[in-house]
Image (cartoon, rainbow, N blue to C red; front, side, top):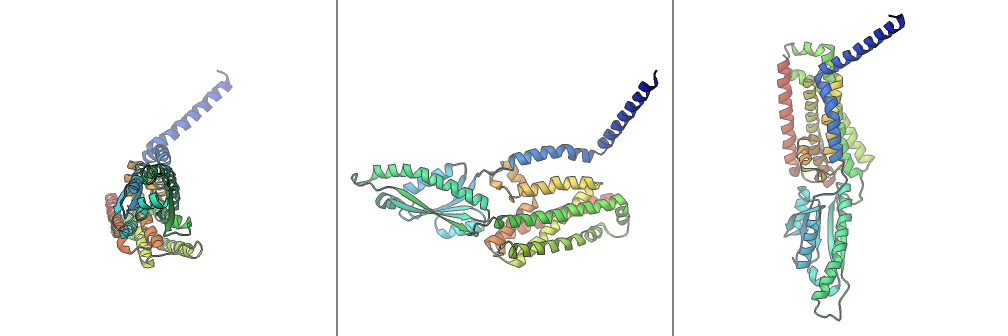
Length: 387
């Protein structure tokens, strides 16, 4: 055989062996392989379903002092739309205030007393629309859709007024006059909505991702195994590894709050003490998530990939930071309940923007404590397994 074809065959064989060797490396590392194959599926599902600017199922409360037929027809029309769901028919205005504070409604509609009489005899009637301004995207879209529904209903109501008017010679022009009030954010600043979400994202990144990468780096160097076989208990090892990141995260928290108040002019309408306390609790939850990842992976690349897929993407897409949870498919709405950032962001919006008392956030505090205990316990159990 000539020398040239022989050398070419050897080169091809070497190339094929290198390719086969690389495939073997990838196939042996099943965790990285699963992340690489699963991440595109997760991303396309999340981006396809969660990235929706549509308005759906916004919770509405109504107050109709006269309870006349025209008001009820307008309420039914609003409830029948895909954008709104009437969840509260209040007998007193104070019920609407309590519902806003408990996050049970996002929009309130208050009809003028004697709505039917005003339309049929005076030609106009007022409708007050109250919107929760802590989420400007939902509030602005809800205002637009409500005004359109009211405008479409006006022609139907005008026809009914004409048919029911006792004096056919005089039929007044019918006009429903909606007035809008933006609660908690009258200036309609978008920063009021984004600052709590950015706080949650920053703490997630610093605590979860950086902690997991740091601990896995120790494992790669072999120093973590030395600590695990030492007389020090695994729980104390975990605490010692997380304290520096707790301090750094606390500094980031202070910086973020100061910038939000003095640079972005976002007020802290509620208790600053409870804003800090709940934030510190969330920092501990995020640190426990980072520790959990470090018990499941053995390389820094795996830690970064899993942290990005499990923490960063859900925090951005499913926590309500960018997109309304109510507009997502039901399955994703339920899944968002297991994302700690969702609860933290809700608490920050309530305390900072709405200025509510901490009693309205006690359920969130309990949920975050539950996350902390469950995740920390499982992480310690996994470290004991390593011993």
